[in-house]
Image (cartoon, rainbow, N blue to C red; front, side, top):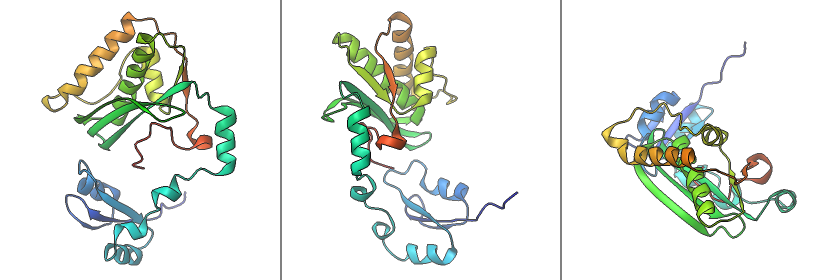
Length: 213
């Protein structure tokens, strides 16, 4: 069995900045911190150099990271059904602050947005985004399809149950009120909208992505 390579984690902005020798320690330093800046490095020397520098110098600029190649764009044009909406969620920590939204797949016009909620998980956000999108299309009597990049959310919708392991508490009661409403809606409405899996590997990030990868 091959030995897992050790990594060093630099936190430029978090609850406590510094260099950490384990992901567990790094996670404590950034979890729930909005706008946390961190990155892993293969050696301690690289980590020290990075920590003494600026975060922006050690990340791939979003304009390059999200750039669509000609080949990828061709695949999108040929394979994506643009008569659709796309939904996605984003969380800061897991659990942590959560928000979700839906957009027009082609124009990226935002159709709805909820949050951020004080505490939730990304999967809960993905589930709520999908149900919100389904309800929106049903209310408009629209025959458009809906895209999600979350297999878990799609599974929960099929089962009409948000199967989260997050314990309910005062801190997350707002988001669980929406979960209860979403489950009730699924159990009292016939869903005819076609739900499609967004092919992130071939098409890049879903149009509703919050751009925080």
